[in-house]
Length: 147
Ligand SMILES: [Zn+2]
Image 1: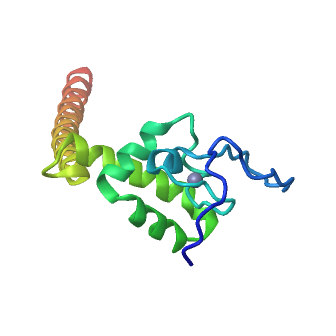
Image 2 (image 1 turned 180 degrees about the vertical axis):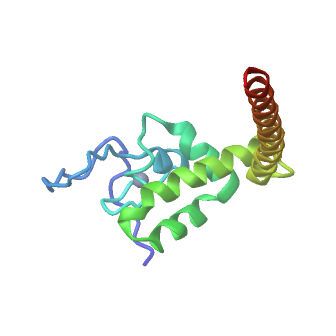
């Protein structure tokens, strides 16, 4: 399989085939451009990494590696791939921001906030019960002075 291409001119693209593809995919995709490889018709990365947003692929590639991204996507049905890409981007950005905890750091931070807010809510509810009891006492007091 060591077939070398006869033409060395990279500027000549293969003849465009008029395939009716539903999503508009511009080739080469950002992934293939960064990896310096030919963006094939069946490139799994092309729908999710448009050439207009090269940073998206750079971030995901830095953390997961291109081969893993391709493997993850190939194991998923097409309907779930866009979500998988956005979660990988989220995780990769979190890992770059926080190399120690990654998105676990964000989860811990949010969990702490939830705990604090729950404590505040419990305190406010206790205060409310207290105020309602005081109000009830006033009503009893007022009605007893009127009668
Ligand atoms: Zn591609």
